[in-house]
Amino acid sequence: MREFTARNPRTGVHDWLGQALDPAEVGDVAARLRAGQATWESRGAASRLEVLRAFGQALRRHAEPIGQALEFDTGRRRIARLEIDSVIGSIEGWARIIAADTPPEWIQGRGLPSVRHTAAWKAYPLVGVVSPWNFPLLLGMIDAVPALLAGCAVLLKPSEVTPRFIAPVMAAVAEVPDLAAVLAIVAGDGVTGQALVDVADCICFTGSVATGRKVAVQAAGRLIPAYLELGGKDPLIVMEGADLEAATDAALRGSVLSTGQACQSIERIYVARPIHDAFLGRLVQKAEAARLNWPDIAAGEIGPIIFDRQADTLSAQIADAKAKGASVLTGGEIQTHGGGRWLRPTVLAGVTSDMAVMRDETFGPILPVVGFDTVEEAVALANDGEYGLSAAVFAATIEEAEAVGRRLEAGAISLNDAALTSIFYEAAKQGFKASGLGPSRMGEDGYRRFLRRQALIANTARPLLLVAFSEEGST
Ligand code: NAD
Image (tube, rainbow, N blue to C red; front, side, top):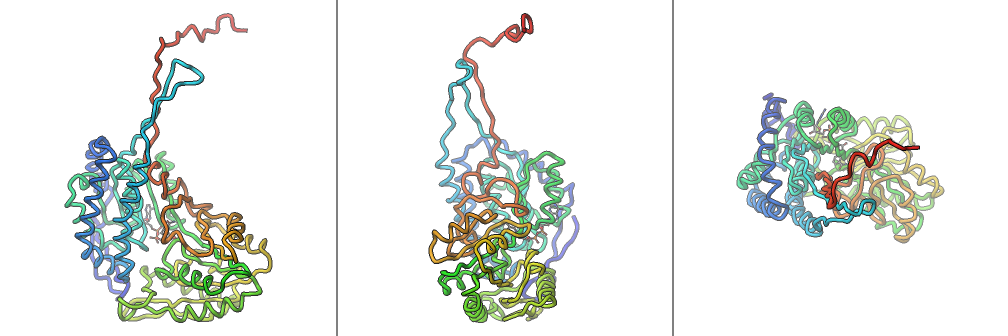
C-alpha cells in the first residue's frame, strides 16, 4: 500500500488520506474475485439480475453517505445524487436488454447436412474497469453493471482524484454478499491501474487519450480486449435557419453542464455567418446569467474545477487564444473562492484552428465560436482534428440537421440539441478516431462485449475417415 491524498475541490485542501493498492495486492483481490466467478456465472442471468437489484436497493439505503462523499469528491450536490440515481436506474435498463435475449437454437448445417451447431456465451472471468474523475461513481459502474450481469467478476479502480465514494459504495456492496464475492472497488493511482490491466481478462478504460494509448498497448501485449472510452473535442454546427433561442440554450447547456467536465461537452461552435453575431450576442447574455455554486453548494449551475491541474490547462488555453488574437466576450479568468477554483462560462470570438482551444480537449466551460460561409466548410471544420466522440447540428428542421450530421466523423450526433448522450443512454454508439476503441457500451453490444461466443458443433453421422482426404489418385 502507498499513501495518497485527495484534494477537496471546494476548499483546495488535501483533506483525505488513503491507501493505493500495490500490484501484489491487486493480484490478491483478483484471485479472490476469480474464485467466486464460476459460481456467479453458473447461476444464470435472471438470478444475477436479482442480486444487482438488491445492490440497487443497498445503494438507495446508502445514498446519503455516498452522496456526501461524491459531494466532497466533485464539489457538486445535485449531480452527485443524479449519479446514484443513474446507476440504480441502469440496472432496469440492462434488465430490458437481457429480457430481449433469446436462447440460441441448434442450426442444421448447410455444407455438411449431418452437422448441426449452436452457440454458447462464456463470460470473461475477470473484467478490469479503470475510470476517471469527472463522474466518479457513474463512469465506473457504467461498465461494471453490464459486466456483472453478463457473469463476469469485476475489479474497478476509480480515479485517485476522487476516491472518497469508494468506502460508502463498498459498504453497500457488503450488504449483498453474493455480489461482494465478485465485485471489488479499490483505491489507487496509475500504478494500480496498470496492475489491473496485468490481471484482467478484458479491460474497460474511460479516461484521456494519452492514458488510453498506454492501456491499449499493455492490453495488446497480453492479448486481451481493451474497450476504450476516451476524450473528445465535440463540435456544434449551427445552420442559418436554426432557432437562435433553442440553439443558444443547447450550446450553453452542452458546453457548461458539469462545468464542461464531461467527455461529450461541446467544445467548438461553428455558426453560419448571417446569424453569427446575433448568436454570439445571445450566447454571451445566457452565459452571463449562469451562476457559480459558490458560496452555496445548493445554488447555481457551475461547480468548481475538480482536478486542480485542469484549471491550469483551461487558463493556458485561454491565454494561448488571447495571444493569437481571440477576444474573451465573457468569463476568461480562473476565480479562487474559499480555496477552490472556478471558471465562469467563457465565450471566445475570433478564434482560429491553430489555437490550442480549438485542437486540444478543454474539459471546462469554454465556448469558442467561429463563423462559416458554406456547409462544406462547416463539415470540414467539424471533422478536423484527432477526436470523434460526438457532435451536434442545429438547423431549421431535423431533416436538414440530419443531412449535415450524417457527414460528421463522430460516434453520436445530436440533432437540434447538443450533447444528448449526457442525458439519453439508449442509443448504441462507438468513439470514432482517437476517441475510443471497441464495441458500443450502450445497447445490446454493451452487454454482449463481456461474453465470448463459443460454438458447439455436433455430427449426427459417423465421423469422416482420414482416407476421405487421401492424396492418392489426386490429379
Ligand atoms: P486519465 O487518463 O488521467 O485517468 C483515467 C484513469 O486511468 C485514472 O483512474 C488513472 O488512475 C488511471 N491510469 C493512469 N495511468 C494509467 C495506466 N498507465 N494504466 C492504467 N490506468 C492508468 O483521465 P482523467 O483525467 O481521470 O479523466 C478525464 C479524461 O477522461 C478526459 O479526457 C475525458 O474526455 C475522458 N472521459 C471520457 C469519457 C467517455 O465516455 N468517452 C467519459 C468521461 C471522461
